[in-house]
Length: 186
Image 1 (cartoon, rainbow, N blue to C red):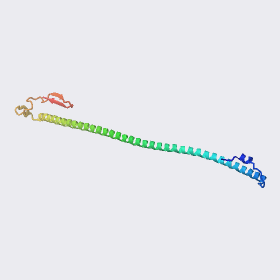
Image 2 (cartoon, rainbow, N blue to C red):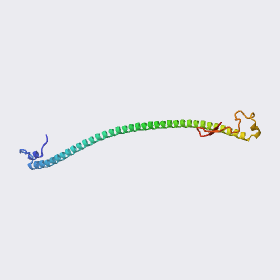
Image 3 (cartoon, rainbow, N blue to C red):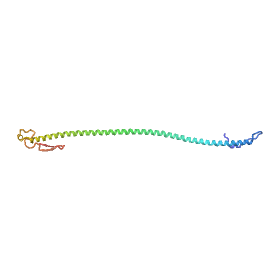
Image 4 (spheres, helix red, strand yellow):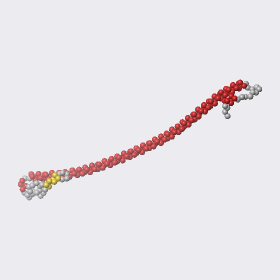
């Protein structure tokens, strides 16, 4: 049980025959009272400081817990972002590969069509050259016919079987092919 400074001041001792000097005892009790009051004030101030320090420590501990939670949450978020980024990159790569594949297929299809067209044009070229040779041969024969000596023309037995036996030219009708080549028929 703590002693109150007022109790020290109020305390009275009984007088006895050979007792202590009352003034000295009262003076000493006064000093003790002052020192005790000072100790109580200091104790109270220290107790308040301790309580304040405990409150601040609780605040810091609470902040530390929130910071740890925030750090854990940030780590989780970073992990999710990394995972999401990797998935997105994978999807972008797959899409690019798919697009490249479609482009390659379209290119191959165009190449196939161009090859078909080249083959068709080569066929037309061969047909044209054949018809041109035929036309040149027919004109050559026509030139040969007109250049023959007059005596040979008159002998009908010597005339080749494919030429008419008369004087008119062997080709009288004109006809155009689908490619625009002009032909004359008998």
